[in-house]
Length: 112
Length: 118
Image (cartoon, rainbow over all chains, first blue to last red; front, side):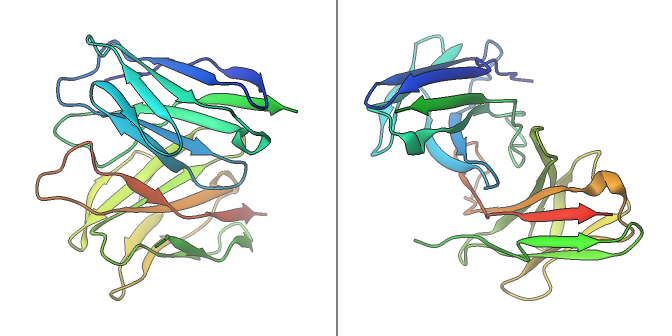
């Protein structure tokens, strides 16, 4: 199992860059790393996914070192609306990736 | 942008009653899922469904649970005899599915149904 470890919580202020690091020491060769965001009483929302190096979209960047044992989600210039729980997920089983296994995630609180 | 929808948004029921939670996945998606989240806890996988049959289920998904795709658009979760501990948010998700299943298949979640069992 590719278990993930993330900080339980982080605080930031509006306009700052936030970096959330996730460790996944047992990641399998063909596993991708995916990040989801969840607001209270809403379903998780896909943010970004990557395999190695760097991926960027309109919402975030994902940095993955060569050994792929960790990844960092970077949120540029956060706003109050980025207050949410952020989950890092990797494939539970490289031959059966139907299910997503959510951890406890990182609760990001953005202050004005 | 296409989205997964769920009804009702909130369902209150008495213990022992049957409930059916409904979902309309994104129209061209082939894989469907149910997850639940007990208040303050993790999102937990319940079941995945493909080609009109269950492809995987968790230990939570016991004989009290069933899923069905009754027509071309709806995907339902039935709990036959609800228990107090079934109180949770239930999320439906769907994914496009590709020829070979890979971990690149993004799942899109609905807004959830809050089930309260009294």
